[in-house]
Structures are given as structure tokens and as C-alpha cells.
Image (cartoon, rainbow over all chains, first blue to last red; front, side, top):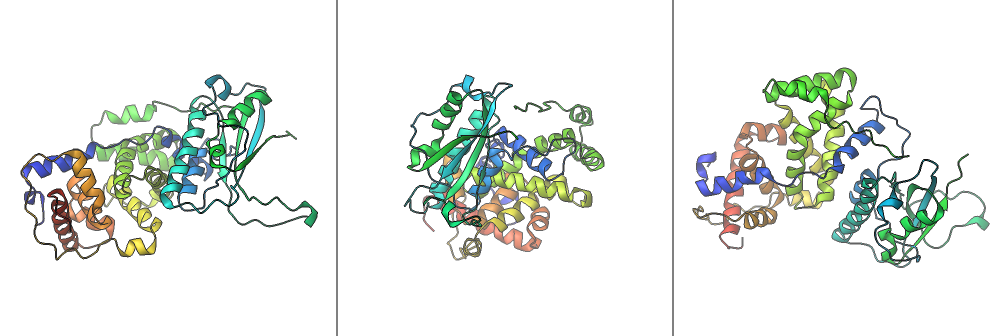
Length: 194
Length: 197
């Protein structure tokens, strides 16, 4: 058995039909180009932008523990489109995501689902004009400073950075983050431009 | 600040498409990309091959879209790093597939890799199928196959690679590729006929 002649016509037709399978998500092209740009493999693009959320979310899915917390500021899903696009004079905000206290480790399938949920949320915002980006933080941290400044009990698992025209809009976007559904804590803070 | 700098229709892509030779188009785009790291050239290459890479990795990872997207990204990063040394001993598509397969192997755990090609050679020969095969049933049966069998069928029977090309991209010899495909087809027919291996 060493070639197509070993397949029946029905088998050959069915198998070759799979060559027209699912297409990659449209956002993947931008994620690939951004990753190449960050590494200097493509000319002519700014390299100071934060890493796109897709790249981060996929890195998280590659096996690093996914952050799993949320802020008890609400369960609203999906900020209105008008809120997602920042104005020219927008303020940048950081949404800090803390791991949920006592949450058991996620299984692989749970992690995949969680990553998809976060990614879809951020990609949805970007498609509506937001500049949101995010990073997953490694679980280990180098502790600096005095003991009096010790962090709280929940580890900081990741963050998003985005622009919004005013605090209300920023809060609306933060409240729509799926992270909040997973019983953790988040913190929204304006970034001071220095 | 919002970035909307996606060039939707690179002029380079339009100009080379007229030549009608897939391999020659790839050569021109690669040459342009190597020369100036041109984004439009890269996007044209991406659009020519990303569908195959995504589809292949998605099925290889049993429908894990996140893994497939990560695999596509990493394949292109490695390709962009290595294109200058690509000698065109194979087609660009074959070379990219080899990169994707190596990434996929690396991304899997050792235990999973060890179980990639379990010995199903002792399965009784399943009858060939002469009825129409439902696509959903076929996808499900493929997903149930050991990863190495799934890869063999995807590369040869779905994507149309020759045994020589499969051997090159997977690092096995031609005879091994043939025997793997034979066992993979038998395992697939076993599942499609409702028999549990």
C-alpha cells in the first residue's frame, strides 16, 4: 500500500475534500506581522507598541498558567462600540488582573477555553477601534523594596493596557472583561504620562 | 492611539500573480522579502500559505484553535529568520510544513510524543469504504487517530504531499512514510467502520 491507488474513489474524495477546511482567523495575520515586527524581521514598523493581545493570549495558552481572577465591579459583557475607540486626547489605563484566591489549577481544556475567552474579548475591542494590548506575567516575581510594601495575597497574573476618553468609558471596558466572571480581582488605574 | 496601517492589497502580490507559476511567485516574493524585509511581500507570502498551515495544525492539534494559531505564528517567525538560507530544494510550502511539524513536535509533552505512533499494526485489516463518507464522521475519526497517523493522512491524503516530501519534512525515510500511511489508513477505516481499535 503506497499510493492513491489504495484508496477507493469515495475515500479519496472525502479526504481531499478536507483540503478546503477552516480558514485562519483574520486577526491572525496582524498578530504574525506584529510578532515579526517586534523581532525586527519586518522593516518599517514601529517597535515601541505593546505586544498585541493575540500574541500574549497564545503565549499563555502554550502552557503557562493563565491568570484567573477578576474585579467585583460587575458582570457586564461587551462594551458598546462607541466606548471601545479612544479619542485623540484619550488617557491610557492599565487593568491589573489578580489571580483568584484559592482557585484550583486549570485543566488544559479549561485553560484553552479561558484563553479563548480573554482573547476574543480583547480582539473584539480591537476590532471596534480599541488599542488594547495585554501581557501574561510569569508566576515568579523578584521581590524588591521594604517588607512594609509587601504585596497582597493574590498574585498579579497579567494586565491589559488600553486608552479611553474618560474614566467612565475606561470603567465600562474594564467591567466587560471576562476576567470578572472568574471570582478574582482586578484593578483599573490611569497611567500618568511622564 | 489606534493603528490602522494594514495594507490590504500589496502591489507586489498583484504584479507577481500574473505569472501563474506558484513556485515562481513564491521565489519572487521571498527574494523581495529577503532584500528589504518588505512587509507587503511578507503579507503576500502569508496569504498564500497561512490557510494550509492553519488547517494542518488545527487538525493536528485535534481542533485546538489556540494551538493552531500559535503554531502558525511561530512557523512564520522561524521562516522569516531562516528564509535567507532556504535553498529551494523543496517547494516553499513543503519547507513551511516541515517547520510547522517541528514546532508541533516541540510543543508537545514528552509523554504525548512517545505515544504519537502507538503500535496499531496488529489491528485486523479493515475493509475499504465504498460508500459516501460524511465529513463530520471523517473529521471525528481523524481526531481519534494517534497523532502520527493523523499527520501521515493529513500530509499525504488530504494535502497531497508525496512520500518523498513527507519524508523530507518529517525526517523519516520514504519506506517508513509508506508503512506509516498504510497503518494510518487501516486505523482510520477501522474507526469509520464503527470498530474500536
